[in-house]
Length: 122
Image (cartoon, rainbow, N blue to C red; front, side, top):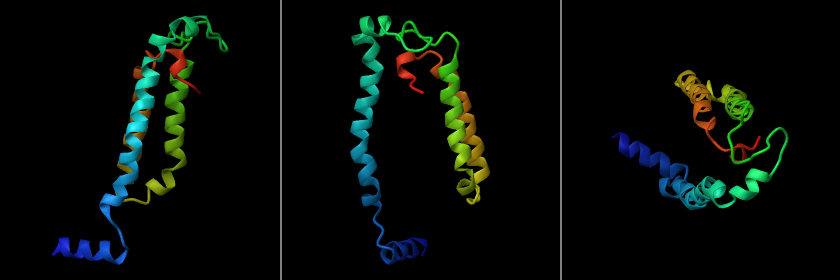
């Protein structure tokens, strides 16, 4: 009975689950290519990244010595989640989702601390 009600809603609002997944599936190869390309960038351009200079970074292939960029990445992630919390809290499980996404943003810092500086643009 629930399946028939769901199909009736899909028909009423002209919703097709396959069409909803089409755009993310088309974007996935592009996202993965960019991700793996950026991940390999320090290996191919180490000579340019090690002599490049930006702000207090003398060597862009090394990690941030002051941990400013990992902190900024985690902070902006948590900040973006907090900007959208009004819509999230309208959902019955919104408080749990908000807490989970905040924790994920905060827990990302230990992982991004090991990234080369060139991969942490903020």
